Length: 538
Ligand code: C2E
Ligand code: MG
Ligand code: MG
Image (tube, rainbow, N blue to C red; front, top):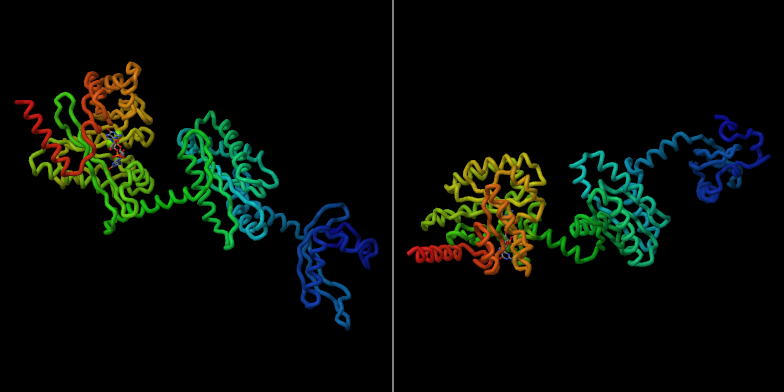
C-alpha cells in the first residue's frame, strides 16, 4: 500500500519532516508510550514491532503495524529509523469482533462472566485500594415460566430485564450477564454498606414491578470483596455471591429479597455440606457415627378408637450435630438425589418393623411411609418397591405411602401412572399436608388416591375463638365426596379431637395420642391399645 493510500499524504510532504513529521500522524494517546518504547529498545540495537493508531489526512483513524529498526552512526547513536508500516485495520476489526464476542453475552449484549473474572483479577492488583462489591441478581424462578410458556418467552424476559437493569449502569457500576438467568453489578468506590443496600432496594423495586404480571420473584445477593493479601479466589467470590442470592430466593418465592453474604451464611453452607457427607456415608454403608433410623407415630381410627397403624418418620443423627430435623435433611437429600438410596433404607427398615409386628402376632397394622417426589419420578421406583415387598413378604394391603402435594406440579401423567400401579397392587395412597401447597381439587379428583391427610394448619385453626370460620369440616366433606378417607394431622388438644369426631373425620394423628415412638415403645403402645379395646368390648 502506498504512503498516500495509507495516510492521505504524499510521501514528499512527510520526507525530512517537510510539512509534518510522521510523529504527527500518530494518534496522540500512543505518542508517549511509543517514545518510551523506542528509548528502551533502540539502545539495545534490537528490531521493534508496535501496533498503534494513526490519524490520516482526512481525520480517519487507522490501525497500523510498524516494524523497524534503528540506523546507527559510528558513535552508536540513532540517526534514523527504517522499516515498514502496514495497515492492519481489517485485522483489528476482526480482533475487536472476537474480543467483543469473548467479553459479551450474545443474547443480552451485556458483558459476560469471563469478562467479569478478568476484570476482577485485574482490579485486585490495579485497584487494590478501591472498595469493591458485587450485587448478584438471580432470576432462576424464570424456569417455572419457561416450563409453562416456553423457552422463547423466558428468554425475552431475560432480555427485558437486561435492558431495564442497564439503566442503572454508571462509571463505577458495570452490569454483567454471568450465567443463565443471573446478572451481576460490579460496583467500585462505593461509600458504605448503606449505599449498597439502597441500590439493591432500587433494583428490587424495579424488578418487582417488571415481574408483577409473571407473579415470580428472585433473589438479590450482595458481597463486599475484602482486600486480601493473597490472590483473589474469584470462583469462591462468585460462589458466595450465588449463595447469598439463593438464600434470598428461599426467603420468598414472590418478591425480590436482599441478602448480604456473611459468615453465618457460610456456616449454613458448611452445615449443609456436612449433612450431605453424613448422608453419603449412610447411603454407602460406611461405618461412621451417623445414623438414619425411624420413629413410628400412631394413627387412631376415630370411629372404633382402635389403632389403625403408624406413620414411619425418618430421623438423622450425625456425629457432628446430633439430631437433625427431617425438615432440614429431607430437602437436602432431595436436592442431592440422596433421597433415592436413603429412601430405600427407610423402606427396608419399615418393612423389617412389619416382620417384627407379624412375628408377635399383629398382622393387620398398617405402616405408612413418606415418599418424596424424586423417588416417585425415578423410573424403577415402583418395580423396586413391589419387588422389596415380595422379597420381604410384606402384606401390601398394610402398606401406605404418603406423597406431598408437590406431585401436582411435576410430571403429572407419569406420576399418576406410577401411583395407579402401586394402588392396583393393594398399597394405600395418601396425599400428605393437604391444603398447604398446590392442591387443586380437580387434580386430586384426577389422581387416584385413598386418603387425604389434612394439614396441621387446618387443625390449629380449630383453636381459634371463632370456630364457625374454620373450613376444616368443609374439607372433610369434600374429601368424602371424592371417595377418600381423612386423617387429621397434628392433633394436640381434646377440643380439636371433639370437633373432628363431630364432623366425621376418619382418623387422627398427633401429640394428643402420642409423639413418634421408637420400635419398642411403638410395640408397647400397640399392646396397650389392644388391651384397652378388648376391655371396652367386654
Ligand atoms: P409429615 O409426613 O407431615 O409428618 C408429620 C410431621 O408432623 C412429623 O414431623 C411429626 O413428628 C409431626 N407431628 C405429628 N404430630 C404432631 C403434633 O401433634 N404437633 C406437632 N407440632 N407436630 C406433630 P417430622 O417427623 O419432623 O417430619 C417432618 C416431615 O419430614 C414429614 O412431615 C415428612 O414430610 C418428612 N419426612 C419424614 N420422614 C420422611 C421420610 O422417610 N421420607 C420423606 N420423603 N420425607 C419424610
Ligand atoms: Mg407424612
Ligand atoms: Mg403431613
